Image (cartoon, rainbow, N blue to C red; front, top):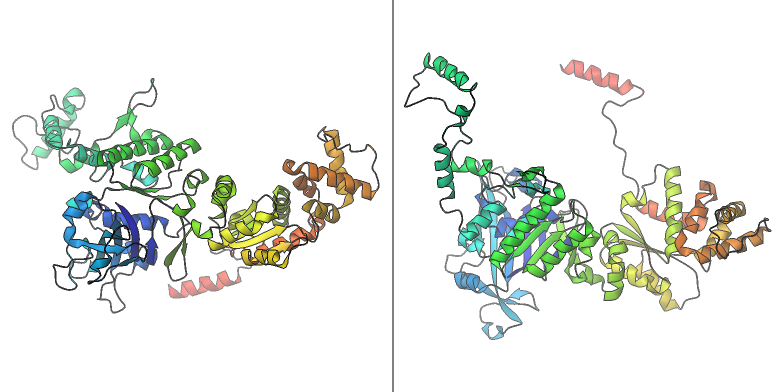
Length: 607
């Protein structure tokens, strides 16, 4: 069973969304774009315990915290609808009256009279369920319930509620970020341990037996402390002066709990030892990475119990975990669950997902969340995508823009010049802070493919590449793939550097690598040749050491006024497109003090 469609209205930061999923899904995007809201929306509809909270939703679960229309009486509704396909046999039997026919290719429900089209695999059974939440002015409370979206046995407009027992058949599990660790291993309602005990039938009589053992604790805790009992006896004597205290035995005693089921749930805790010399400690006191791994172990236990019917939502599995563990988690989710929804910024997680499974989320000015599948930028072949996935694609696709550089030397030169420009001008918004990635490729032939890939994902794209005679149709590919295709006038970046940096700096650099013994076969002369000789030696050094950062080391010797204009002019275009956010002032920070004096007078007058 899997989710293929999710519709959201007025939930948290999302005014509206209509999202489609093919199977396993990796949700990526900037902060506050709606990744966690999507997971929470799935939980609101599919989780059997989510609506057991009181209240099930709160003010800020409504978009902009608006739960009443302008008239102050008409409620605004949260509505989240999920469409499920590949229904398990048990779900299809239990919900048979509410299933509908879904045309896979046309992405639509069949209308009455189209039964002759109902032939698989083009047409399959689907189930739509939705959660609605509103504010009830009469009760001054928030209410929520889950319904079958298709309820043919009821009057028009009426929907039949979905029982909790039906929701349990969906097998939905949601692991939030570190917030989950605070209760995942507790025995509170809806915790992972509580769910495991329920699935295994262990809870029968658990609380009654525990309460009985605590009540019959002999002796009570106060009897074990010789200096505690006299204090309690004194308290009893003082109480007796005001109220009647009595009963068989002592009136005051100490127990480890309030002896109610709910209190025991919050009191009982999971202890464990991590090393042979360590005594068991509460789970909250182990390392964050260990805690996350423990939570995953519990989830895998649940997945095994539920077998082939698990829909798993997980936020940021990379938190506090080393790369190899991140890869193991991603492998587990992809291979052991029916469907998973994962949010992540980690290249080690992102690279495990096929491009068709990665959805880039973007939120427009009207709070509508839209999605783009990475495979929409299908200009990269599988091997090319895999080769670059961890090195740069994962980082670049998460930002607002990308500079595709022709090679490693271009990347090195652009990074060095950008750093110097940013140090010299504090008004420039640093590229790494703006989310602009410099992405090097291997030769200019693949630049348009990468540009088209990133552009299809909604990024602003820039190209930085060498001049060479090209056919008009090849030049058009750069124009189509990039918002700014920037061709340097030289045939290679090395020629640009020796043409546009001071010769004295080039000789200083050559002397430095000669003296350190790093020159290899360059044959740098001991005496300074003429300027053309220096440039020839510098060109040879740059071309034979592309991966050694020679370009950046040469540029480090330049002052801001000596940087190559062929690079600075290009970067100025990028900085203009991504200006620095306005500075945040400090309240009351006014060097002149004039306005502060006026404000003070106004304040005194008001008082």
